[in-house]
Amino acid sequence: MNNKIVAFPHNDEHHLDLGRAAMHAGEFEQAAEHFEAAYTHEHTFAVSRMLTEALLHAGHFQEAQSVAEEFITGYARTLTDGILFAQVLTESHRFLGAHEWLRSLSSLVHTPEEKTRFSEAGDFLIGREKQYLDAEKETIATQTKQYLGIAGESVLMQTKLVSDMDNLPLATFNEIAPRLLTEQYLPQALRNTVALHFVTLGDEETRGLRWFDEDITFVPAQVDNPFDNSVQAAWAKFVDEYENNEPELATMVDQELHLYLLLLFPRVTSVVTDPDEWANYVVRRLSGNEKVITEASVVKRWQDRLDHELAALNDQPL
Image: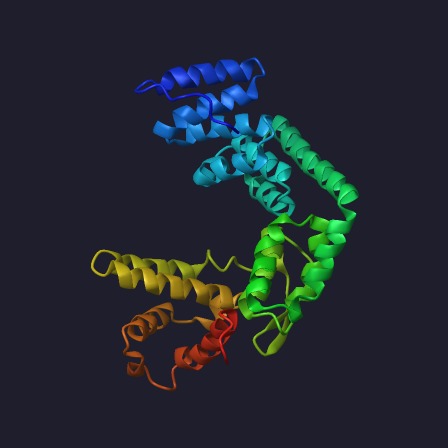
């Protein structure tokens, strides 16, 4: 979109009025330009939402997505705003992400009218997805082949492919993902990232997962989100206590513990029986005093396995 409109100094409301009038008249390009001018000075969810909707109707889907993601939590508050963001994801061809997002909105659906709108949003996604599948068969075939050959890719490429799964049609994801869960040449963090898509989708099938040196099964809909459980809550409290006095250390500890939550899924709560012991060990470790802990500690026994997996994720010699 070319910005042809100069922001009126100290008069963002004037741009908003003009933008609303343009939207009402169906002049979406002009509306987006006015809303963008206002957004420059009034960086709020309300203006972001108006700009997102104008960009969406003007066909600037990627720009709409970028703007919306600056206030992503705002779109989770109401069904209307949530459906708007689902449409943005759909038109941006982030199909798997759109399916996951719509499912997250289900708790906001109560009345018959809301159920109808929610159903229509799902139908819109499925329709767009079908159009894409019909029109992009060669592209999808190439993608599928690359994912199925992921074991031969570098860790950097493996990470990119797993990160790009949000863009896959659901049918393609369901074909590829189960194989990735048991791919021994994929780092544990990436296998678990794939598994978390099944959790977000509320998948109720029993899935196989290569978990460290074990082959286990789990039902995604029946396991805890690794980033929303008792261990995560205890660690978040621990990090908060360090935040004021040692903010840099708190950030490093938080990042390390966040990785542990991902790596230990879906058995976080059964492995981490003493969250404070783990957190204290990470503090000592990052401070260079990891020898304080005894060799017999369960934390120490797990640390070698976690280090091994993190080294694999960073493509380092093991």
